Amino acid sequence: MTPALAQAGPSTMPGAGLMLVLLSAALTDNILLTRFLGMCPFLSVSRQIKSAFGMGLAVLFVTTGTCVLNYWLYVYLLRPLAAYGVPAESLKLILFIIVIAAFVQLMEMLIERISITLYYSLGIFLPLITVNCAILGASLFMVNNVTSKGFGLWRVLTYGFGSGLGWFVAIMLMAGIRRRLKNARIPPALEGAGITLIITGIMAMAFVIFQGMIKI
Amino acid sequence: MAEPQETTRPGQALVVQLWRENPVFRQVLGICSSLAVTNLVFNTALMCAGLIWTTTMSSLTVSLIRDWIPRRVRVMVQVLIIAVYVIVVDIVFRALFLETHKEIAAYVGLIITNCIVLGRLEAFAGRNPPLPSAADGLGAGLGYSLILLFVAVVREILGFGTVFKNTAWETVVLRGWEPGVYETWWRNWTIMAIPPGAFFVLAVAVWAARAVALRQEAGQAGEGAK
Image (cartoon, rainbow over all chains, first blue to last red; front, side):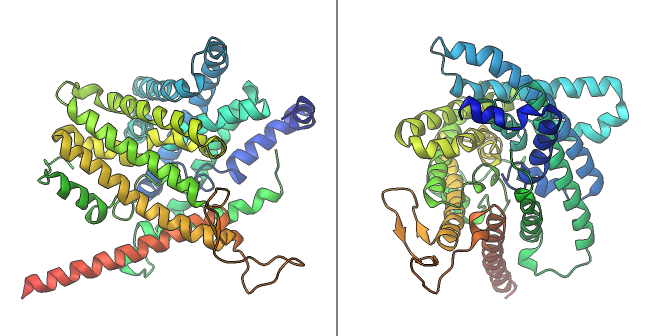
């Protein structure tokens, strides 16, 4: 994108720009419903509202944190190194996953110290998060946004938070719907994953509709 | 999955992964990294090739060094091994298919966190000899590709009317309706080209496969009762 085009975008209005980034990350480009990331925990953890809440909260937290950390890593370490011939684009895959694993480990230790009740409601989900595609995905798409749309720190922070929020909203909606489904008569072959996928498809349609409203 | 696996012959391990324990419709695992690209067959084929390579090679590697990996850090070691093979895929795709790579670059990176790869390493490769492990990884990759390619073919034909769009092998299967240019009975389904379509097609595929599997099991149970 040329600099002129980039400036004509939301960067001229900082506040409105952030709002747009948040809405598009959480609604129209919902990381779960339009990019299919984090499907495995979404399908398995959405059976109960309580565990869905814990998982959603953990994802929200870790996505926001790791997006910012990986942004710093990318801008201040990888991009300067690329000038010396280091393959930054390949290296970022390994570095990002290490950052995520380390962040999750630290979070787990901190939460255990600070609040034991939070640890028990969040704790079992934290180790699972290291291999949640939504977290790594948010960081990888963040890099795309940095290179193509010139995202700065604030917009990266908002993007990470918005992605996590979108995932949280999606899994909470799903958990609520699945509670009602318990009384429904479903063909035996469609039970579990099948019906969940169909409902997710309908939800995705509802979210995709917003695409005409928000464009960044 | 803590109990040791009884299937240690390579051929058997491969077949079990293809159908009886198919990762997608049995466990609905690992659809995250590729489902987003299933509106075009070619992109899907590339992603599947990358995934087959990664599962096979990382299963082989983990199985070879399984006695030297400390248990406490094994997940980290496994993830790093997977990452190395994914980077190989990334570099090869960038060299061979630059245009397609631009579209799917982020998803190629996400093979690292694909649940199937890590799942097979944890469940099988960590405690079995190299050859069956590689076969198990290959089977899981192929079983996954089978379903994903099915989804992709259905989505691209209904969504665009073509197969292998944007490549040298582009073939028009259904001539789409365009006002003023040509008129046929067929109109492309937009829903198949956008994300929700993937959910519906996958759900139908899972539904059909489960129905067949349930009938088979019912048949076996009936024979066993006699």
